Image 1 (spheres, rainbow, N blue to C red):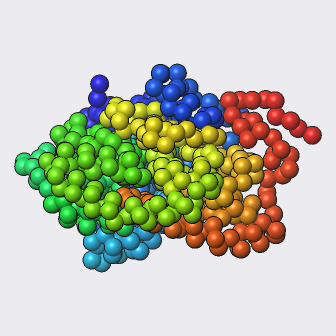
Image 2 (tube, helix red, strand yellow; image 1 turned 90 degrees about the horizontal axis):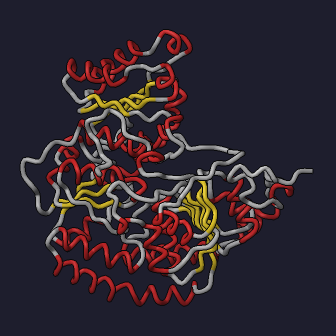
Image 3 (cartoon, rainbow, N blue to C red; image 1 turned 180 degrees about the vertical axis):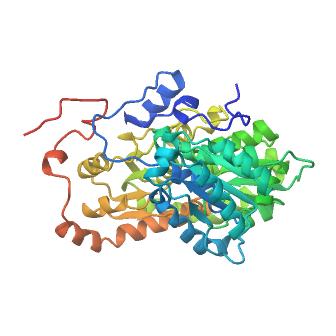
Length: 495
């Protein structure tokens, strides 16, 4: 049964749509087996330190569209986290085909206490008009916040009325922070709005065009696709409204991270007939081989794909083998979002390292395409074996700190800012790479391996930091079981 319904204004959250969870501790194989046999259950925490807000994740999908504007309908503080996307756009835009990466068009309705009493509908309507007057965007996105959601402003009706009057798409995106415990529900909300209001039915197919659902990594696909006779259509960072509208004409859709693209990939296939590549992204040799072969099959370029694989293997396998000799037996720990975290585990295994565990921010037992082939964690387990100490935690740093204090890996790999600090405080060399394309393909294995080696060899700073750093977590907590609060456990030792 289709999990995508573009007739509705709001997307169903991941807890209900996919059965996603934020609480688990065990091994990766146990988690996969539970998901496959239908016995997976979420565990709540009797203590929670922090949570991610899905509003930021929804903004991630639309703020970087070149000729669009975004309105945060709520208090101005709710837009405070959106400035980072303006920085990302200016820094990375030049590498992704943006001739003049200017400041992003980000606005707030600046709801105040009186608006929560009398309603913010008129304020939103006036803001839409003012944004259109000031910057003349090709589309306007309205992202909701807790304040506008609690008072029940009819954002969809306001957006439709404004759209009729100003003549451009005005897209309501429902992503209040309280809506879902799964932070990635924000991605789905943003892409639901994009698919519902911007993507048009295809009048023709472009047999060399491939959609790429990604964040904002360096463009590696121009070279790859050029050798295969294909062209890349990035969605949605750095795209234009027109590019997005014609994404239905593509021959296929690929995802860099299924955590990000699960919903849009399924929407393009189920709503617009664009087939999705249903294997894990190309991280590690096994997954890279499968991915290019599936890309070749869907785009009718099997021979070109096999030639590409042979050329890349000949070029990079000797270097990969040398790295394996240097890294064999070294231990590591990973903290990241779900699918990309799985990809990092695959890279570590490919390099001959031993992952001692992972703190992954949530888990999807199934993606929106409902294909088991797409399960990135299952593919890691099948290709490389089990991962112990596998923790699903919605960014609970107190659990991560406790585990790191116990396992003391040779290196910590992180995907999100602020997480490497905890490894460094324990004298653990820590590596954060924000470019999700950096580890892709055969070349990516070499690049990541070299950076890991460099990080471990240059450990003087973290060793000195360990001697002088003050850890906010006390000995009392570090002596507890890391998962003492998971599942509502009340047997936590106190003094």
